[in-house]
Length: 130
Image 1: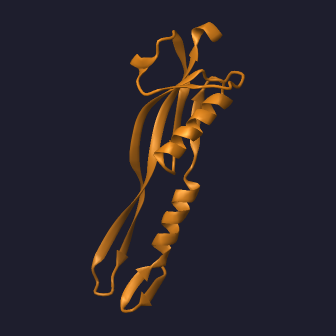
Image 2: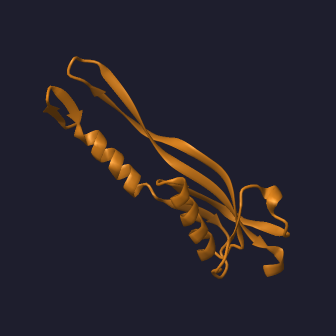
Image 3: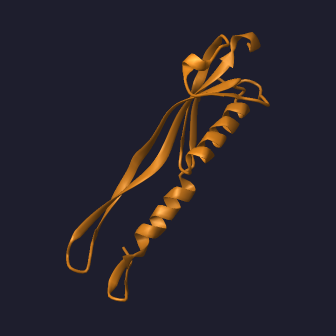
């Protein structure tokens, strides 16, 4: 851990660098399911009850890192690439990815939990397009 004394205050640079790294690099999308020919448009839903077409679930996807809007766009793009006709966003959460404990100049311990935004979605294919 790199401690720098600035005007009598200890600054922990490693925590800042690590947080930036996790935010910038924590943008994975995991997908498990079927794949079809890419589609040009994906309908967006936030509840299975909102889907009026007959459909089957193609698979499940999880994305982490970034803002909710960025994750939504990246998941929609992944759905297009995998041939989905629609995507149902089912969960959004901040998940703990680790923790760092530091000791300040007077010996007090401070624990910082590292968290990233996680969004889960279901990719769907309309039965009329199977």
